[in-house]
Image 1 (cartoon, rainbow, N blue to C red):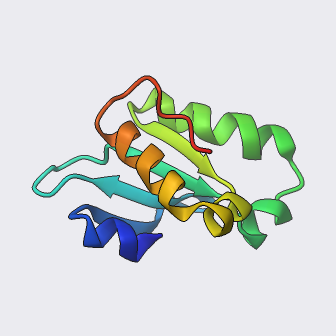
Image 2 (image 1 turned 90 degrees about the horizontal axis):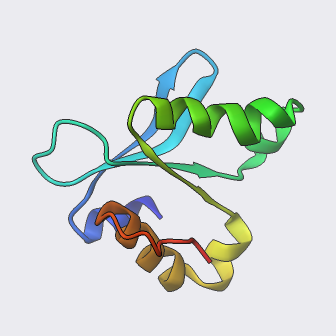
Length: 102
């Protein structure tokens, strides 16, 4: 996912955050100083956090409180429909309201 985003011209930084609170991928448009989108991926680390409230509600809510858009990408969706996931991510980056990740 990181390479596909970079190939499309986006700047992507993995594992952004502090302490144990991290965003899997932080994305910004070229030349932008701030991140426009945070992507949370259901990696092994995602499921090692037994606190479902923190993992699925508080992390995205905290990022949104700092002005980030947040998307959860399920690995199964990436493997089944990577192009659809990329299109949805780009819609998010462009501010589309219809940007639901498949």
